[in-house]
Length: 414
Image 1 (cartoon, one colour):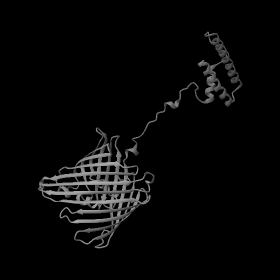
Image 2 (cartoon, rainbow, N blue to C red; image 1 turned 90 degrees about the vertical axis):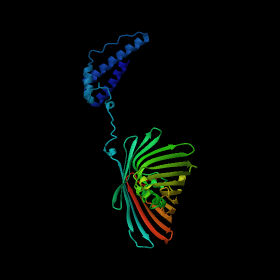
Image 3 (tube, rainbow, N blue to C red; image 1 turned 60 degrees about the vertical axis):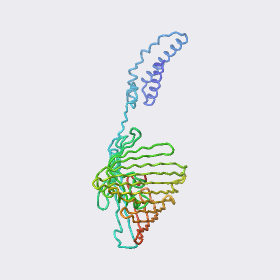
């Protein structure tokens, strides 16, 4: 039966092709003879099936030249009709994932320029190219990634961060190796262009260094579930703030950070963390300890997240620098808040309090600000700062900040 059906199908194709090509009378007679022969074979097969006996097939008419028919069909369609294999099935699709475009890293550039004006003293450096940052990021393979950020600041070029990190390690650990901003509190980890004000909080700059705490070394990170989400970070580094904190001892410094996160409801979440930093300098019998508590509460209704968000955050730092076991403990910290007025406008307010490490003089700052996100790539900020140092008259400063970015890095909020 299969051969009969195939023959019928071939005949139908040949008939259609013949009509399309207007065959000659000889071809028509040959096709008619083929059809008659096939009908005779089909009638013979039906009769045999009715009798339940397998009868031999009737011979094909002698005048049927299958070879000539196939040759005519091949000439009509332009190919050999006996080649029934699907040529498309032999196609191979080869991915080029590691082509040149994907071998190149993601490159980003961020610019941060400010203008200042004060109400007293000599007006100097009213306009400042605070920082230009070039970032390179790439996934090296499914388990390892790298980030490198080069900063151009005050005419100097430096590596702000340059590290590789591995994920998917045993025990659900993440390992970082290189130079990175350390996980002390909340805002120290952020890049300068991403903080809520024009500078890092005064307590961070006073106790951890002018640009915050950064170091070169090893970092381990682990997240846990349970009642909320909990993160533990352990870091061993040679701090870049060695001169201020550890008198350039060159010895390892140790940092531990615990962060606890709770989703209170669909719109509100809270996080509470603690940090401890420790380092020594045996040459000068110096021991430095910095402890910190950080807090953040954010309200962001899901249906209005583009237009409404309110965040309150704060940190309290305790700084103790002892020589031969003697040294006072100084306190500093800040409380700040940002409120999204609309899709583009953010109002901010911050209060800073710091006791100086040397003599304990108190400095207070009040900083209101207004930020306009012109787009995802550009934001403008106007800020006022009132500062009062003990025994010195208060100063007032107005600042205007413009930050723009190109590339995929944009303005990370971590």
